[in-house]
Structures are given as structure tokens and as C-alpha cells.
Image (cartoon, rainbow over all chains, first blue to last red):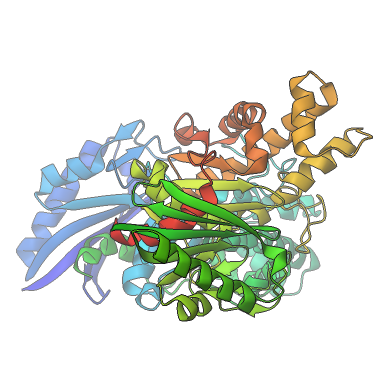
Length: 304
Length: 304
């Protein structure tokens, strides 16, 4: 009987579920529409049925369920006021899942889940200090200090996306001005393309393809994005002194256009003592359903 | 025979030396002029003589020597290219001191030393996540995560003074523009006073006294300083999620004019989830030779 963990990545639109062994192989995976479940209770009861089937049909012992979700709090085990989720308010998903399945469950936010994944299945096997930046609709981060994901006093640490690039900058949905995620994210890149004179409504993938085909506007958009990111990463490095910074998520697929310029700008902005010491790299989990692996890593790290 | 540690705070001008017991009482202290020692070798040999006398004349067992110094690296045990010190280049002070005295020695930078002090003799007895900001000629920081001072991969973590307030801001001596310490430090406050129209050359203490006497220019200087600090502390809180932030050092003596406004501005800039959770406070070591206590704490924390 193989010991496995279930990793669940809950997004505003889709939920990915995977069965993950200690080596980080995804033995089986499937996808649900998050929006099909009006209430979290419905989601949990369908999850319990799915788990029962998995156990009945396979020679597995499920040692735990790990869940990554937006605005989930590792300490409280609850999703708290997620802005883009069908389930509103405070959802104690960890307790609900445990009660429905009888299987020990852990919960963290999506960016921290990727950091757990790097820690157990990726970079963390060789590194004790690193950060993961997730580039999607917003900008999230998971920060690893001394071989552990940083949660802070209230389980809220790692909000790199809401550090300030420019006090007079773009209005952020959080209420503050000039947050990094208003520039370096799907919406940020789209807005920069428009600001530079782009007329069409293009998403970052389209802009990336055009940049590769040589469109100057598209190239400038990624150049500006990479420079803002690189400059701000200097702040992150000054505070945490990591060995590496990993980029993850949809936008990070454009890393050939982002990383070299971000690295160069970061070096220009670093104190001398830090220069040449910190690499910006694509996440090692990028092509491997990293968020599912990360959620499963919440379980496997107890056996590290 | 009482067990004691020696704490040494080396500054560009003065060096403070204290004998500190487990409770954080300074049993004896004295001061040398750092500039009296042309070479670090001279300093160390006089230190060895002083230690011998301390042992001969007192019923003490010295269990270790802790040293705080500018740009000292905890991992390498060396002072590395301190800009305002008589001793240039790389000074392996930890090894030199151990070889001269036969007493185990530890070394860290001055801001981290204060964080160690808070951890052992101050706030850390009740807190696991907090930051110490030292306000002097520059702005230093010591960041405590999970009950340990954060050093990072290369021993360089915690350079909050060199995170950026404004990409088009004041030129910093580090080469970057708009670093926090160009605004919130002795020199930063002096410059703000001038920028606001002050004609005289006043130091922050004079400006503070005038503000207390009602001078509008002086009040505005502290108001602006506190707002810049408070805004930037929101970034620090978003990343580290601490329980409290402690201000230490000469400028922090003006905390009645700094803290209320910094706290208010920080709250305005924080994500909702963080509001009302993090207090800015004067360091608990403020009136107790905190840097000497902190240096001694390097030794005592091994027995925590």
C-alpha cells in the first residue's frame, strides 16, 4: 500500500486535485469548477465522496490533505474574505474537510503553497533561504527563512505584492497607491501596454508573443515590468538576504523576457555586499502543477 | 563565582564595554575612544589586558564576549569594510578576540545586536516576531522571526534602511535613490528641516526641542519624517507580519513626536487584515545601554 497525500489548489474559477507521493509524482489528478459549488459545504461533501472512491479503487493510504486557496490562513485553517471566490466570509475549510473525510488536513494560501512545494519537491532540497513570487491576477509571495515558510505572528506574512513601488503610483484594489502588484501582474501588464500606447485589449500572453515577434510596444511593456520588479526585488533581498528568487505562475511563463532585465535592474539597485549573490530563476515547479504539489507538500513536510 | 558575559558596542567614535549578568544587569561598564586605536590589533590587545584585570579583581567567570559593530557579519565573524571606522578592510575580530583572550567570542552588526538584546532582555521574552529599527546616523534594523534574529543566506539580512521610499528620491550614499535612511535618520531629518525652509544648522535633538516649544518648521520636520517611516513600515509589516516594531537609538528619543504619527500613517497604508494588530513602540532597552546589552545577549542566548 503506497502512502500518498492529496494536494488541492482552489482558485476562483478552477480547483485542481492531485494524488502525490513522497517523491512528488502526481499519480492521478482531476479538475473541478470551483464556481459549480455555491457553498463550501457542497464542495467538501463532494470532496469526501471523491476521497472515498480514491481509497476504494487504489492501493493507497492517504496520510493527509493539503489545500492551497486565496487568502487562506495557515494558523486558523480558514479562507478569510477571499475577494474572487464564490464562498464569502470566513470559511473554516480545514476543520470542515477533516470532519467530512476523517483525514488530517492543512490549509495555506496559494503563494505559500508554492513555497512549500519548492521546499519539499524543488529548490528547498538545496536551499534554506529563498522566495517564491507568484505572478497571476495579483502578485503573491511565499518566503522561506531558515528552511521554513514564513507566516509571522498572525499567519499573514509574505504580502510582497502590497509593498509600494511609488507613493504616487497606480491605485491598488487594496486602497493603497503604487503597490507592486498594480504593475507586475496580469492586470498590471495589460495596463502598462495601454499606457505605452497599445490600442487593443491584449492579455500578457498575447503581448509576450508579440514581443517575441518584435513588436516594440510589447517589448517595452515587458521591459518596464521587469525593471519595476527588479528594482523592488532589491528591497526584498536587502531584507531577507535569500539565495534565490523563483518566479511562478502564468505571467512567469514570459520569464525569458522578464528575468534577464529584472536581474540586471536588481543588481544595479543592490548594496555592494549583495551583488552577484542572488539569482532570479523560473520556479522548478513551473511545469508540474506546482500549486497542487505545494498543497501536498504541506503534508509531506511533516516527514522531512 | 558569578557567571557573566562581556558586551562590547563598537562605534565609529566610542566603544562601550559592559559586564552583564544573566538577568541583564550591567555590573560594570567603561568607555574607550575607538579612534584611539589605529589598528584593530591594538584594540584587541588592550581588550585582553582589560579582561585579565576584570577576572583578577572580581569573583566572575566570563562565559563569553559579544561584540556589536558596524557592518559586522555574524557568519564570518568579521567587520567588513565599515565606512566610518578607523580600521579598514576586512577585520576578523571574532577570531582575533578569541585568540587574544581565550574566551569564546561572537560578533554581529550593531542593529542586530539590539535585536538580540530585545530577544533576551526585552520584548523577546514575550514575542516571537518583531523588528527593531535603529535610528542614528543611518537607519539599521534587526528582524526577529520565530524567536531568532534573521541573518539570511550570507549574514546580510535586515537592511531596511536601504529599501526604497521613492524611486526619484534623495541620493543615498549607497548609490541608490530614495532609500529610507536618506529621510529617517540624523542626516535625513537635518535635510528635511532645511528643505522645509530652516536656515540654521540644527541636529535632530535641537529640532525636537524646538518642535516641543511649538516651532512650526520643526513640528513639520518630525511630521514628515514620521509619515515616511510609517508608510514604509507598512511594507515591513506586509512582509514579516510582526507583533511589534521597536524604535531604538538617538533619534528614537524623539518618539513622542514620531510614534503616534508613524502608527497612524502605517495603519492607513496597511491591508485590512493587518490593521490594529502591530504596535510601534520605543525599544525596551532604550535607557539601558541597549547595544552593550545586545552584544552580551549574543552570549546569553545560547543558554536560553
